[in-house]
Amino acid sequence: MNLLREPAPRKDPAVDARLNHFTSPAAPAVTSEPVVSLRDFTRRFGDNTIISGLNLQIAAGEFVILLGRSGSGKTTLLRTLAGLDPVEGQDVTIPGSRAVVFQDARLLPWKKVWRNVALGLKRGNARQLAEEALQEVGLGHRLEAWPLTLSGGEAQRVALARALVREPQLLLLDEPFAALDALTRLRMHELVLSLWRRHRPAVLMVTHDVDEAIALADRIVLLDGGKIVAQERITAARGPERATVAAPLRKRLLDALGGVVEERPAGEIVALHAGARP
Amino acid sequence: MSPFTRLARSLGTARWLSPLLLLAVLEAGSRSGLIPERTLAAPSQVLATLWAMTASGELTDNLAVSFLRIIAGLAIGVTTGIVLALVAGLSRQGEVAVDPLMQIKRTIPTLALTPLFIVWFGIGETPKIALIAFASIFPVYLNLYGGIRGIDVRLLEGARSLGLSRAAQVWHVILPGALPALLVGLRYSLSVSVLVLVVAEQINATAGLGYLINNARDFMRTDIILVCLMVYAVLGLAADGLVRAVESRALVWRPSIVSQ
Image (cartoon, rainbow over all chains, first blue to last red; front, side, top):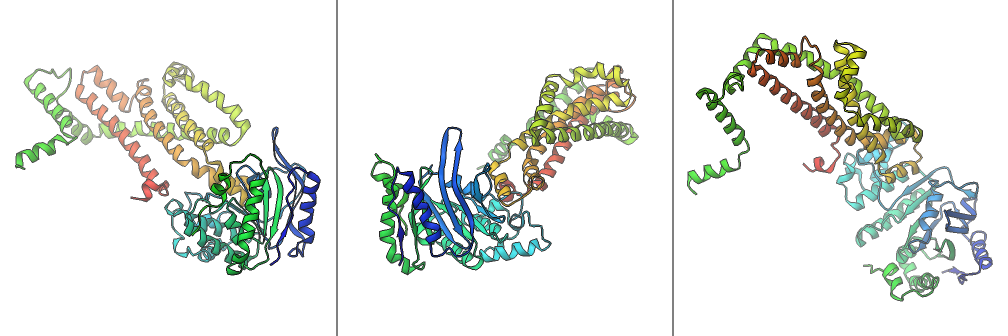
């Protein structure tokens, strides 16, 4: 068990920068060139600063979870990494092959499931690739189905297949399981992990669910007010072994989340992040 | 429940009953002399005339002429409407250039242009087709333009995040997404085209349904006028049915149709 954690100083930008610097070179998993690199990244909408001075690097094949409350800038950061927002000459490196799975599956309702997966594939064997990808997510029998006839979990599995069929270097997941019921969500965790092990993309997943983060991540990045306020690297293997480190980790994460903003009602964190899990 | 009450109950919900009753009243009125023939021909007389005109080819020949006018006018109008809607819907400059003109056009009742079109195009086929074309542009334009602008941006973003080019986004996302709106516009255009046809054919026509009606008016043949009105109604119904058939094929992915 090797948990790295910085005490999260809140209002001191110098310490904040040190915190960010601390992660990438020192992190044991980073051996090759990072696939994602942001230096002093800032994003504003008008007068509203969403992200300020953020540094983040993600190594090839690393599973990073971005944790934060609503409005913390998680989705803005993900959209930048997805290439959906202009970076306006900032120091941002993202790989050419990316794929995103959003909270809503965003399948095109007028295309059958396999055509959704094959969307934009230029190769001649697109149908075969789509079939294989759908079999991987356990939907080999729904190739010809219309997306609007799928359940929420099925639609998200199609979205996963559509992302993975492109063999991306960077897979971005934007709260992909937030709308699913608890049992389906646990199954999706297993599926995502097995797909990740097989294809080894770097993953950045956004969530506000602390337990989900602990179950899946190599590294948890805690975002608040557009800044990285804490990072946790988890080296314990996923599954039962991780359960032993989960409790203190969970407490630290919740404390960090709760301590960031003063005058917060005590019950709010529990409502947001400590949702009952089976 | 007695057979009588069962009959009364099923008659009470039968939608065909009141039109049939009306026809019966009209027929009785004509036979008894209460309704003179020059006011309204008896339904049986209308049916007989319909049969005779069909058998002699008079009706079918004139219907074919009118039909070709509609087809030609619609082909021009709908194509123009689609092109303009694509230009305005897909680019900001296109919107700035096209949309104000279309909104101005919308405020002019098409039929008020008839005199101008006669001055420009004479009294042959051209002004008739031009009127139908002009009138059928707008419903297609407005609906398709609205459909393109109403595309779910999340779907577009999803396609963009997969690396689809702008052209591929238009082809895979925008056009299929706007198709339901286009079909609604097409339905409006079809009914408008029949409406304009009626007026356009009053312009010195020597063939067509309008010609038949005008002639019948001069001879006070109310039976022929009624036959032509029936044909107009059938044209409208057929046009609607055509679009419905296209819809049920093209929009098979929609849940209301999927679940059936």
